[in-house]
Image 1 (cartoon, helix red, strand yellow):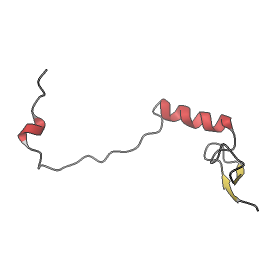
Image 2 (tube, helix red, strand yellow):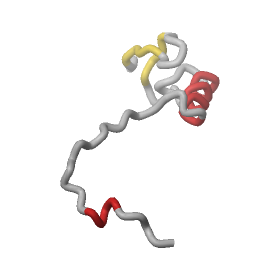
Image 3 (cartoon, rainbow, N blue to C red):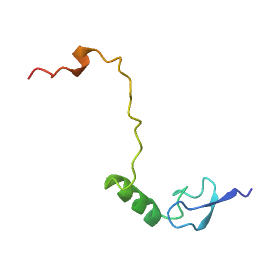
Length: 66
């Protein structure tokens, strides 16, 4: 049974998505490690939406005791 063909997110090579590919969604351990390194060096970031919520209480904004 053939799996679907996807592109490696790192290099773009076509790979078959199936349990036999232990590096999926990557084509190889090399591409997997390059991607991991990008996360580790913060080249990739998950955006955080700043809250304009003014419902914070004064206690939430006060400095914490040492």
